[in-house]
Amino acid sequence: MKTKPNHQLVAAIALLLTCNLQPSALLAQGSLTPPGPPAPTMKTLQQVEPREPISSAPFTIKQPGSYYLTTNLTVSSGNAITIATNGVTLDLNGFTISSTANPASGTAVLINAGLRNITILNGNIQGGVTNSGSDVFSGPGFGYEIFHSGSVPQNVRVSGVSVSGCRFDGTNVGADESTVVENCVVRTVGGVGIWANTIRGCVALDCGSTAIQGRQVSESRGESVGGGYGLSAATTAQNCYGSSGNSFGLYANTAQNCCGVSTSGTGLYAGRTAIGCYGESSGGPSGLYAQNAAFCAGFRPGGRAIEATIANGCWAGAGTNLITYKYNMPLAKNLQPETCNLKPSTRIGL
Image (cartoon, rainbow, N blue to C red; front, side, top):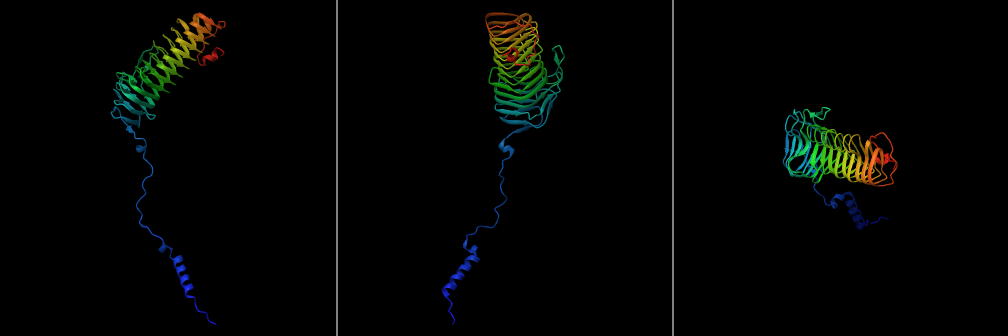
């Protein structure tokens, strides 16, 4: 017996097959033409940190911004780089600025008078000036390494710069304003080694005048071979060493954990207070002087080891003391002079 086809069922199956075989007919379609090459997704270095290159000298910075050296720079006379505007960062970028001027003259980096917001970083300034051995500094190079003309600049920071062989001052940005020098090295300069308001982690050796001069000085070492102080801090010196042939080895209003050595001057002079300090002199007035001295040691053979108004727990390694009020004073000991390589607290058994 024949069966009649179910026309409704046949129609439903046909419709289903149409949907499965042609899904594109049921979906909306966009353009198949590519929109173009992809746009860059990363910023360039100029966009991230806009900086201007310096590839030759002399060069004057006239616009605020960030500048960097691309090579070593040498001049035969005059200034190498002059900063003539506020708001400048100068990155030496590990390169060296030098001069062949003979006799030494000009300035490696000159900051014009009265500027503010200046930063100088990461590099070397080198000259050929030498010390004759009798405190006469002469030879080719710069007269000044980092220096300011006229009034002291404000908000200045110098960091990670090595300076050597100049006729006058090494790094001098003035101590009367908001100036900072940190992690810098100076060697063989005929004038002041480092001069700033705040000085941290610096070394200045073989200086014709005061090696390090500031208001707050910490973790630093200064050695003067001329008539200046080894290290001078108008307010505080902490964890510092200073030596001088003809003046104070270390001078501060308050000195803590410091060491000062002098040939013909006072080894360590604290206008107010010395704590945990050591002062040594071979021919000056005193090994250590302070109005108030606590846990300090002085060394002055045949002379005054410690001079103080009030002293607590201090002792004389060699020489005698001149102290108005003394407390807990151990007996004097005849010792050889020490080298100040150890902390003062180690020296006196604290």
